[in-house]
Amino acid sequence: MQPEKKKDVLKRLAFIDGHLQGVRKMVEGDQYCVDVLKQTYAVRRAIEKMEALMLDNHLHTCVIEGIKDGRDEQVIHELLGLYELANK
Image (cartoon, rainbow, N blue to C red; front, side, top):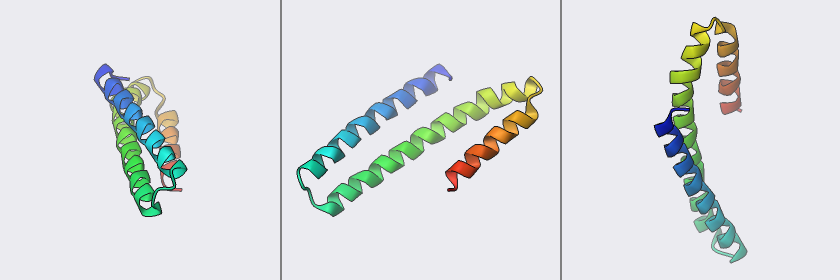
């Protein structure tokens, strides 16, 4: 992973982890359901942004290297698998 992308991904993961801890405390504290759900939506968006960063990194590094190394079919198969997972 590119160093700058890795740093950003790790930063986002720390944010997500902290946010999830907050959601857990809200549930334990019997906070209003709508407020908890708003926070879970924020966590989901943060995860989606982190995934986008990772995919961008993958496309600009591993995919290019895989194609240059002659692993076109493997790379395409992996990308199709990710696409299928994202659309379940």
